[in-house]
Amino acid sequence: MTDQALTRGAHHIGLAVPDLDAARAFFCEALGYNAVGDVPDYPAVFVSDGTTLITLWQVQDPTTAIAFDRRKNVGLHHLALAVADEAALELVHGRVRDWPGVSIEFAPEPIRAGSQVKHFICAIPGGIRVEFATPFG
Image (cartoon, helix red, strand yellow):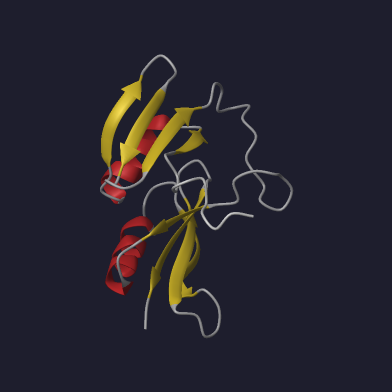
């Protein structure tokens, strides 16, 4: 066993979405990401917050795409994004709670009793679960 991991964090995260425009709007307009590229023929859009690059891929046929069930399927359970502090967590929550196509799973709260991490989870347009988390206290 080695003391040093062979990887250095995520290079990018790829999400398959049923509506590319709605997903891009969520990341760029609600969260302030920048669109940093695209591949119109695929189609895909690349968005970034300056640290994390997310590739949004349009599924071929949204009407026949199968939604992920976190209790039944193997795959991405959720994407967790860090925010700077409690104020930023509340700001993000305020911006996304009424965003079209977003459903809030629960409002900001400690991750568990006695934890120094506060978080909330929502489903973004298209149903992918995203968690926002920050240290607090």
